[in-house]
Structure formats: structure tokens, C-alpha cells
Length: 368
Image 1 (tube, one colour):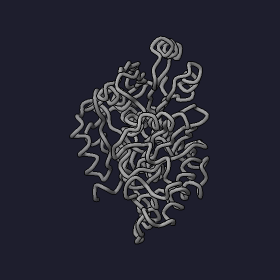
Image 2: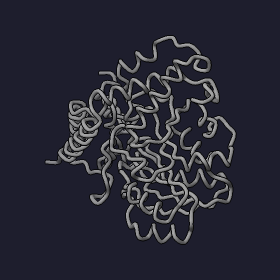
Image 3: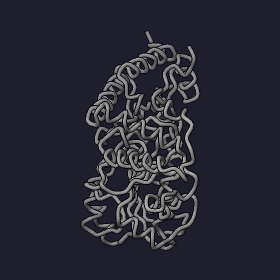
């Protein structure tokens, strides 16, 4: 059995044929043909529905990290204050990204097996520190947890923090995201996870407040946000756009709407529940605490006691199952299954859990 028979990594996920087919067409130049602008606009509006926003959606050519840097570089100046709320390596990492730009960063870091909580503490820090931007991750993929962005947004609004920046790369299209209701100013996504498209496009939901700040800062660079505000008015993008990538994203959004957004979210929740049950039946514990919010798009589980990560990974691959390890303090302790996008499939989950159970028994036979 080839080791790619059961792909369960938390992105990039398997890309379905209809999305791949959208990329096989020959397209003209997006800089000179109005057909591209129509596709860009339609795709942005489709994504806005998935993001829960009436605001603009920008589509940049590049993997999701491009969106993260764009939101920071375009809306921050050296010396400005950033409050980083973190429950994992990505959340902490955003704070380090801002610090590398010369910003004054304060971290509120929780356990990497937790979700953001203790909102009174956050409110106290916001009141005293007066940040220009609050940053958070909706789905902390290495930890398998969600964070409650609505509560953070309420604090942001109450204390009139100019910007709330949220990484939704691993939740967008697989779980409810409400940019406007949560008072998010920069919602950042990528094409390669729940949307099930290739890892070629970055997605940015941008509030009017974020546009105004970006306009004043006028950051210039490949990842600059402000030049994208006039795409429709000018009839051209800041650089040669990736027509094929936008077409794939459009096909991905249409695929979601054909199934129904609520049905897609339910499918992800059912896949997560089946994954948790299958792991429990195999005697494998989840990484995150019972009090945390388990992600519906990715599960982080503890490597069976008595095994190291290379041995466990290779044994699973020999049975056709590909999973991921984790990062930072979870490295060597955690393995992850991505049940997002095309991989949020009950049959696939059942097969994966069967392999996990079988492999564990082979490596750690029960003592008589």
C-alpha cells in the first residue's frame, strides 16, 4: 500500500478533481482582461460569505503566511503596542513577528493545551497597556484547539482598540467564522486547508478601519495591503495576478456552497467527534485539556507511551497513513490528524483510526 493512501496531514489537504480542473484551463493576462476582475470580485464575495463579513476581501498570490505578514507590515509602525494572545507556537509567533518590526509586544500566553480564557485578565491588560493591535489565532493547528474570538472582539470593541488581527488559516471554510460580528479588522486565511485548494493563495478580510490605517502607513512591498484597495477602480492588480489560483479558490467556494455552509461545518464537527472516539477506543489521549475548545478541523493526540515520534510516524506510513508531528514544546510528544476540507470524511477517519489502533497493537502488544 503506498503511504499516500490515507492522507491525514493538517494541510495542505487533498485537492478534489473539480478544483484541479479549474487550474488546467489556459487563461489570459489578469492585468489586461476584464474577465479576471469579474472572477476576482466574485471569488472575493464568495469568501466574504464564508468569512461572515460585508467588508473587502483581498486575494494575494502566495501561501497563507503572506497574509499574516501583510496584515502586520501594512498596519503597524515601529514602537506601536501589540497585545499577543497565544495558546501555541503560531499565536506566540505572531507576537515575535510584530516584535521583529520594532513593535512593543506584550504576550498573554496560555498553556499550549488550552484555549484563551480569563477574559477579566485580558481586559485589565488592554486597559493598562492600550495596544494598537490585538492578535490571536482562531485555530491553533499544532495544538488542535480553537480560541473564542467573539469574547476577544467584545473586549477590543469596549476598549476601542484600533485593530483586531485574527489568523483563521486553519478554520476558514471548516468552522463558523464571523469577522464582522466578532469585530475583527484583519481576518487572515489560506487556500490549502479547509478550502481544499492548492497552497498558492492568501486571503485577507479587511475592515474600513484597517484600510484607513494601511493608507496612512503606505507600506511598500510584495505583501503590501494598501495597493489592493483600488483593484476594481484601477482595473489592475499591484502585480501579475495568479488567475489559475483565483479560479481554484472560486471552484472551492462554489463547492462549499453546493454542499451548504451549515452542512460543511456539521461534517467537520462529525469528523472531529469520530476521530476523538476512534483515538479513545485505541487508548490514545488527546493533547488538549478537557476544558479547552477542541478544533473541528484538526486533532492533536499524544504519541503512545513507550514510542518515539520517528518510530510511530514510520510505522503508520508503512500501513498507508500519513499524519503530522507538531512543533515547539509539543515536538516528539504529539501527532496530528487533519480532518479539514476533503479530509473531513467519516470513512477516511474510520480507516485512519483503524490503522492507528492496529499499529499501536503491533508496536505495543498487550502484556499477558
